[in-house]
Length: 241
Image (cartoon, rainbow, N blue to C red; front, side):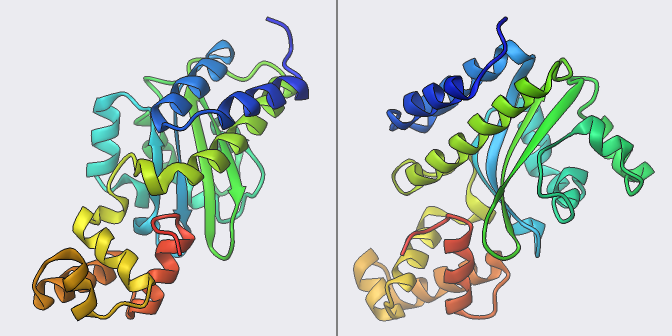
């Protein structure tokens, strides 16, 4: 195929901006990365201060891998997540393996995916504080040229930016940090300054239940106060204010 150009990335972004459903964004992105040997990806936000608070906006993984990753606590052991603390430029799995700080344990963790995929591309997206946006691709080939890598990085940033705007109406690929719909509703109302009594009235539940939802949200977000829970949730794109 012809080498992609910046104009191709601009065209992709224009198409992407017309999409209003996360599934359509995923379909468009999957088709764009396929010619370069990549067949799956994930998009989300990583909290480097606490990996458990990381959230997924899109997960386009095979179902067995999705279940394993989400249910095994692998996000805490994932070398990709760990290396985001020191790498703010895109990198491949091959780059990781060549890093002097890449350990035997890192290799064993990454090898759990290796039988299925040959290489991956990790595209960090700058965020405030200890938060890092992330688009992670996996495929059955190495990236052939720098031009192809640049193109994939550009469209990955476009994907992350647009998908984030759809979350308030479209929701998440997986419950963010395990928050239930009711806990999310309560947290959104906390962000608006509502008390337990006001939350209870808004959600037509008992005041004690409203309080429990808020406390559960604080616990899952690992925050000591309501204000900090709201701040963390906003920074990860979980809620808007």
